Image (cartoon, rainbow, N blue to C red; front, side, top):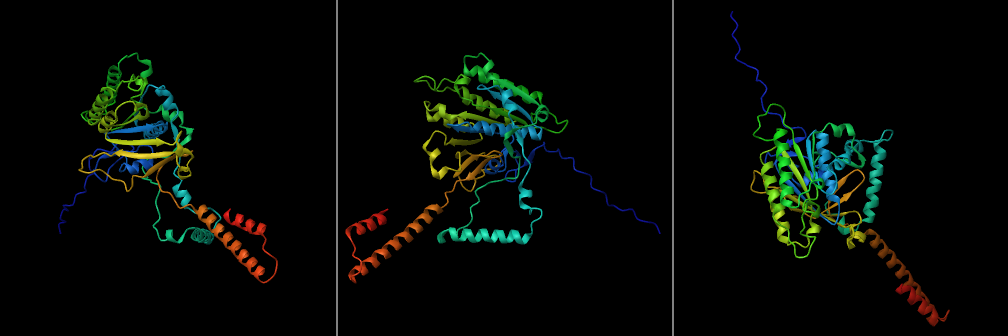
Length: 407
């Protein structure tokens, strides 16, 4: 009997282009995302920084925007991305040399039981903690839902701010520097034009443009621009009375946004807005409209809130000014806008700002109430003894009891 040939054919592997290293598509709008270097910031932005966009970081009375910039560049070094760093306040090479080192994920190890301990001991310990918390928390807070204050997108890396990245890893990254302090331009227009030309050359020479035929796996260009708009960039708006900021910086941001729309690149721009107090608010608003995402870091350093007990766990407030709207009619909206940030030795964390009840004050009130009740009972007993003809209640003893009650 002749055997019939089967018509089944094995499906060949799809020839889809591979994604660049350290990137993933967004679940909201299918936009290609990269990590900002701060997982909590990635969560608030909708999963990460969209490729082809500009993130503006406004720094108010602090230097925390520099920390964000170093995490942004360090994430690129870990993922093998190319970086372009521009600065006028310090040498860009010094910023790259101070990139923090990545730390291992401690979440899985912290969830596992410690070697040599039994599960019953862990259960008993957790039960004891819950019982103690049940006695300390007031009854009106017991039925409220638990607040998740820490955000974690599980995308990107955490960085140890007290440790420097290995030099061998930094040397393996393609780097382009733009030191504005070494250029002798008298006009900010010429300085920003030179920076724009530098970025354009880096995009075309590194084959980051979408118009370049793909011959190998794509890579991402990370652009870090530090402290734009400061007097060191020849911006004299805040240096003399009556001077206003011109159109140099808005024109540059507009051209930068147009360049990145056709490139596999993402930019983080830091602006010290506290130096623009003499300028009109329309200038800052114009800068915000020319960027895709805008966040503001309001530091507590030098303000009354630095010594306030309400903000003792934080270093400043985190404001979301603008979120990107890409391939969709609406943007991703976080569940709350009441945010604060704190800088720890190993992490830069953005958390939900919530003020828990002051348990120590409640405990002191309860102790004071018990003490007053005891004093009132002593007074009543002494008065009854006086009526029965026992020890008399003198004026000095009465005043002493009143003084103790008032205190």
